[in-house]
Image 1 (cartoon, rainbow, N blue to C red):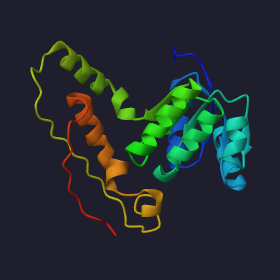
Image 2 (cartoon, rainbow, N blue to C red):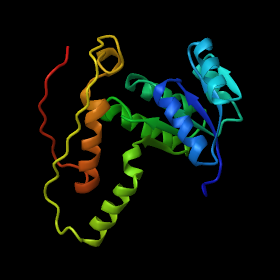
Image 3 (cartoon, rainbow, N blue to C red):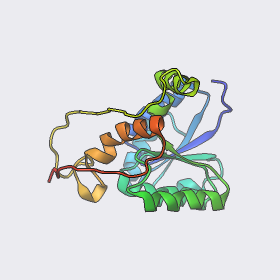
Image 4 (cartoon, helix red, strand yellow):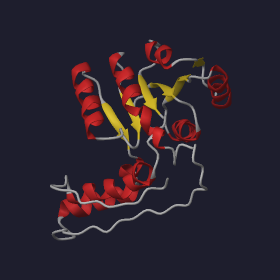
Length: 206
């Protein structure tokens, strides 16, 4: 509640965006003032449900709104880079839902665009801000755990198979790694720092 209130615009209304807006309204002084969707009906329905002043039928209209201070990108992973760059090109700070982008090259493009625009760009890795994560951070900083050389982390979750859905569709950058695997990857890098090398194996859903 102590954070200065900002006026937020939400790109791509959906389940995750709804959770984000609900969390802001319940726990902060932040205000969501606009939503942008490629579907005018969907945007208007989302705005009505959450008490948002304006609904735009394009993302370009939302980022151009002078009453929007910061943009939250809640679209599928496949769209994160383009929508983050869109917000940054309008001079707006951007919070991008995890995973930040599909790959390191896209992430670098967003980081460089943010530096050029002189505004922040951040990944919405919410687990980094949980109370227990802060406890672990303090223990690591104090050396209470000694030298940490190994981290074992996993995440398992059931989803009904839906080939065209966001979680399974390769065209939407679906799959376990970006949507769920990012959590243990983020935690491991949080504890151990940036890796020197990565060895990975996996299997395809489709």
